[in-house]
Image 1 (cartoon, rainbow, N blue to C red):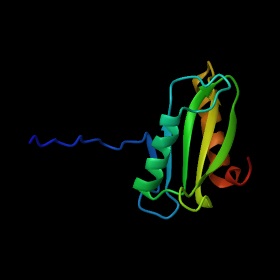
Image 2 (cartoon, one colour; image 1 turned 135 degrees about the horizontal axis):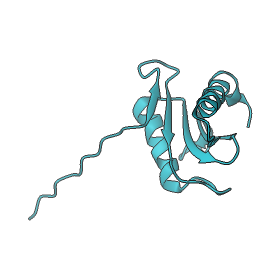
Image 3 (spheres, rainbow, N blue to C red; image 1 turned 180 degrees about the vertical axis):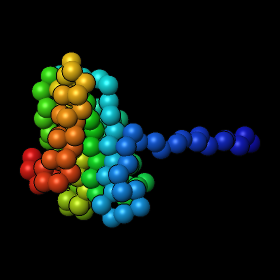
Image 4 (spheres, helix red, strand yellow; image 1 turned 30 degrees about the horizontal axis):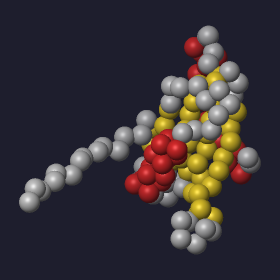
Length: 121
């Protein structure tokens, strides 16, 4: 009888803020354009794993786009179908040709999402 060896995976999101605290946030950047579509099921599963692994209440996928926008969703418990206090957002950041303007846009978008934007859809 053969013994199978398990695969080993490392969990490495792009950005983790407040890793050891109750308000941990995980951000993962993607370099593909959504073009008006939803994130792939694999990307959403990856965010769910980050929720569980880091005990994060909020995670976000960050995509390049032509305009800056944000949408949020919540997870449902697979057994009870009740809402779980975990949020997954999709943030689209417009790609600027001037690096300083682009950095400012990134800062302002993240700051809005972090401080008050999570209460809105």
